[in-house]
Length: 266
Image (cartoon, rainbow, N blue to C red; front, side, top):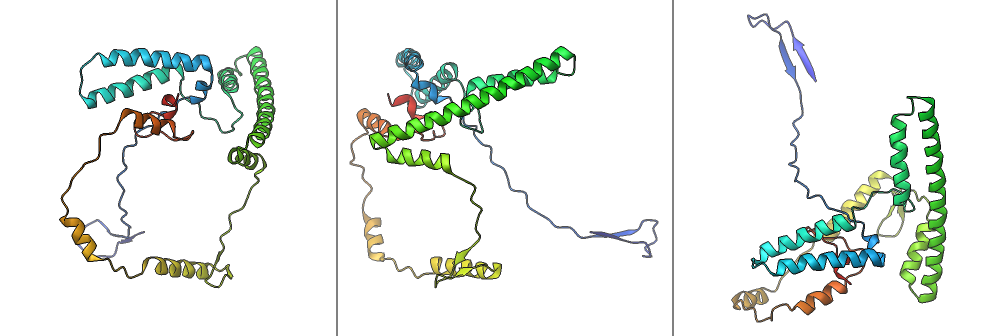
């Protein structure tokens, strides 16, 4: 908000200006490490899986002949895995609906190219309309096939006892819109609808949760501090690492190295 004071006698042809402003500190943004999402579903194809393993094995064999330190070897392994996955698997294409496959996305890309030239001539407009109809038809067929596959997966899951996967699929198929409810209960179990009462309840809950007296046993801390630091544990074996990787559940997100565990579980 600004305001001028032209009547101030300061011996100048300039006018005084009074401004009111708010100063906000800008948070420093951290540089994010872009995560690569490879199309791991292609590993379900035996031919692609065998090709991937063969290329990885050949490149790993060449790395073992080079005498490097641990850090250099780890970086080399990371680069080999990333380059091979990029070449054989490719990156996962982002889709909003689960039934949109690569074939449908390819048709959408073709339609996009025709859309740019549809006003050039009548033939171009006709080609765009045909491509648009093909995309809609393929999208409908893909959705129907995906729903049928989910029903088959539910039947197989119920017959084999995989209840978690079965109920997860059922929930995905039958879920409906659920509006958010801004209602909480007080200590006596009564619902609170007023915003002031809800804020007061949250304040009361946080006060009871964090405001407590902690009385640590100082004798235990002093005894721990006086003990010498020793590491008598044996070194980690290769078999232990392999067993840990194979025991990981499917769908685990990769770490900072962008290497999914699915590549090493077989």
